[in-house]
Image (tube, rainbow, N blue to C red; front, top):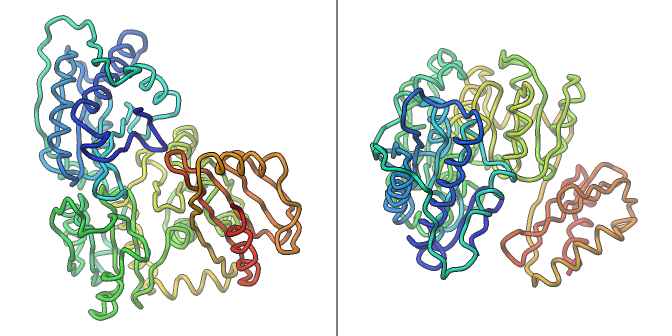
Amino acid sequence: MIKFGTDGWRAIISDEFTFENVRKVAQAIADYLNLKLQTSNIKINPKSQPQIIIGYDARFLADQFALEIAKVMKENGISSLVTERDTPTPIVAWSVKDKNVLGAIMLTASHNPPEYCGIKFIPHYAGPATEEITKEIEAKLPTSNAQRPSKSQIPTSNAQIEHFEPRERYFEYIEKFIDVEAIKKAKLKILYDPMYGSGRGYLDKLLVMYGCQVEEIHNYRDVLFGGQNPEPGDKELTELKAKVLEGKFDLGLANDGDADRFGVVDERGNFLDANKVLSLLFNYLITTGGRELGSVVRSIATTSLIDEIAKEHDIKVHETKVGFKYIAEIMMKEPVLIGGEESGGLSINGHIPEKDGILADLLVVEMAAKTKKPLSQLWRELVKKYGSYEFKRGKVETTDEKKNALMEKLKKAPPSEIGGMKVENVKTSDGVKLILEDKSWVLVRPSGTEPVLRIYYESKDPEVLKLIAQFAKGLV
């Protein structure tokens, strides 16, 4: 059963993610695009031939899957621009806008384990596909494995398959979002870990161009990502943390497999999770960054520290479901100073409505350069002003039956207290979020693809955090 999740369709290579299934998904996207060309006023290049971009990350066979999709597009009268090499998802998404094409198809499983691959469809607005769009595509998929993909009734066309390299164009573009001169003056010493993924040759090159002293680890393509998930988390960046401290670097930076997520390590070798980085950057952009202000958008699972900072500066906060596509929807409707989520994605006003790990890392470098302060000091100052927000996340493995039953029970009869503390508010827009009287909170969300409950919780009080952890353990 091919089903699009939070950010596209992902499956294990050679199990469900086969060339046959890739062709089925490609045909469904081609059918969707040709229908849109006939029934809507999508503006594309004034050429007789519709065109789409196809990109891929560093995963096993991703380049071959990309070429197979290009062939399907050609059969359906749609020309393809295929990236020359594995390329970050945000650069592929930005190229949709730059080339003014129908959209893009990205072969990536982002930060998932190396045995996975995936297909992410990026519409003409250069952001994640909405639920409405993915449902339309899913509706065009064959309903059984026995069915062959349909073929659009397209007359003989001049559709072509070409290759292109978007890097230099992106380099020129991204400079308008960064204070390059401030970075050049700072001459920071930076260690970069692309995690064997597609960020190599992008962030490192930009930092060198901006006058930084850059060293790298894991800066070559490895389809097994060194034997671990290409996720820029605390556990996965152990080597980066140690080498930043050992080499006396000003900071360490990382990206996930397709470089749409970021990882940051301060000069003391401490990992700064996405909640901390988002809070630091939000505060910086308001106070020092010199950007035009707008609202701030965060997912329901992201830190309340964002709200505290916004409250002081009278900035509107939008809370969305988990998934950057929901943040993107708001970014396309109004000026948003920064939008982000605790899983490591962000974008800013004027940029594409898609998470960009390259831009996120550059903003961290600019912040360090312009404030002339180490990251650990910037975080201490923020904590001194707003208090210490401790955030935890985890998961509870169970059965699908128990998972669904528990979520139903939590929605219908949520607890009135946790550890003796009153539950003041209950939100059910995405899972169940229980907000306590001291503003501590816990969010329970069911996984859409696994028999797993995902738990997120936050408190200023370590003792309350322990009480919430005990509550979470007793859920199943």
